[in-house]
Image 1: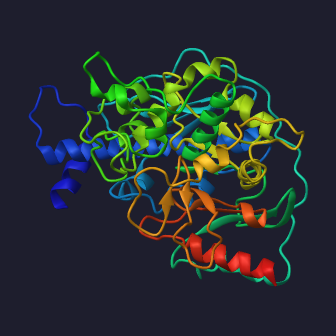
Image 2 (image 1 turned 180 degrees about the horizontal axis):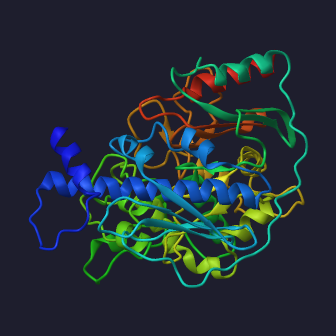
Length: 450
């Protein structure tokens, strides 16, 4: 730790006149600072700009208190002390956020594009010379429906730590069919304030794949196109394998943290597509961001006819933004910003078997059964896995048809088809503190049964 601290302090000094050798500790400390700066630039940019896009407000102080605390080590020890600068256009729209991290390197920069949120530039990279702008006043927001009775007691337990010591709930929403039964928000949050979905985006990605299948633009049992030569066995990897986390590809960490892409400014193409095969496709469950990113890449031609933003608009998710890397590829394994209400709308789509309130079908018949069926290899632990969604098939006291989108720091959409119910919980849970979503789901369902 002492060596890391000394190495980190040295990084802010001016660049030496002569080239020097660096130890592995110094290189890792420098890289950690670059990642921390990228994390800070991106979250300040996305949290503030996407809220303002929806007609809401987030201050830098609010983002520092929520999104920039309790994050993964060692970034949490670095990020608070890095100076930042927020630049706006003459009309007041956020343009970019820059964060200093080393005296001999340019700042880390995140650039706002109102069509696709914020893009993180590579380490040492400069912003694109052209930004596109599109007015967006936010969707119409009805009044918050306050919880009452037993449901109020259940929701309050989400905020007081009863379902996980040290957890921090920012929003909860309970919906039955088309009716919102109750919603509640923490200070600094509200119906128009989006948060990063983290891995809830994987379920959004599965929804986009379903849309492509419905329109005849993709087939889940076809090759995902990962092979680079005729004798490359990755040719056998299908979109289905990727959605079920069963590609058989190697990933460098459990959970496949993808730090170079999420915080380092690398691209989807650089980060997710090249990994080698170590198991036969369809035989081993290995949760990996890379698999979702590859599944989205396999259907990207469908976005020419209908972009993610257009799909969100049709569902009614007007306050949701799918962000991209600096090359324009969607980071649909994590980097989507959305509100509790929009996530509830996604849940309702699945309650209604992929049919919109207008009667228009946008997901194939049977898609709900497909994503919620454990037909592939299964993970260890309390939850099963379908195709882009987690399953409550092992959870006592919860209907066995329940499935969910789940994301880092406590993001959840719980879908209970047999009870026509959707439960959304948003959070900014610190690293090492886990919200008990199964316990909360049981709590809410019991309150609704009374």
